[in-house]
Image 1 (spheres, rainbow, N blue to C red):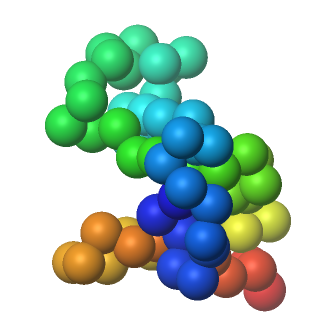
Image 2: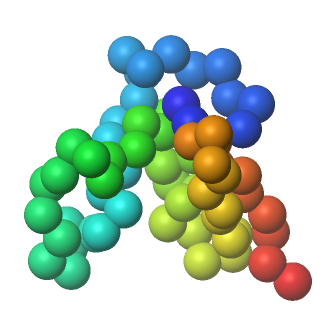
Length: 64
């Protein structure tokens, strides 16, 4: 999982589409991010903001 501090192995992840499939995004492995179930739900949760870092990790912060 690419979430900062998450220790879930790649085999336990789902691929998150950076360009949502539901809005016409194509399945493109260059724009797919492995996230565990917990962080995959969080990236779609409007209560949280996420930031992608140059090292590939993603951090989540609760919106104010």
